[in-house]
Image (cartoon, rainbow, N blue to C red; front, side, top):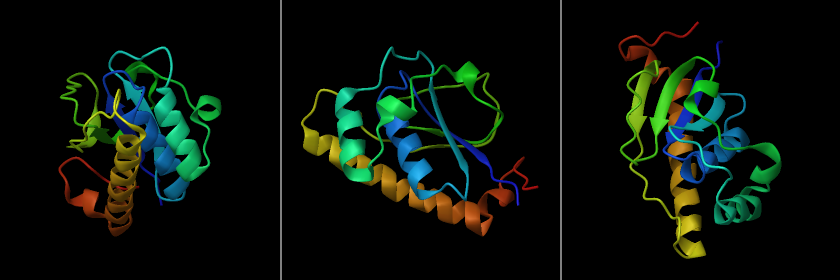
Length: 144
């Protein structure tokens, strides 16, 4: 079965989208390929996000990931925006959805933990839908 490519997108690719990529790589390596990118990639990942993901998932995003522009992505099957009103008009994907997550940047650590747990739940839901073949019903999405 073809593993779909899933891209998590936000403006700077420095916090929520990076967290989603890291969490998805931990939870769903056999279900889909996870990537992240930004419409205007930042110079580095938010240090608070790095700390929380390291504590909760034992992943050091400073060692495994970096902010990337949209152009660095491979062909994408499922494009997930993080809730930052990102519009990717020229970026093709077979299916798109928005997770409407608030940006925890500048907020207390508890907000980063809350965001990580929300992302974890959404990644698990996405995994289930991919495994069930729910995306096949969407126009233009085909598994191969």
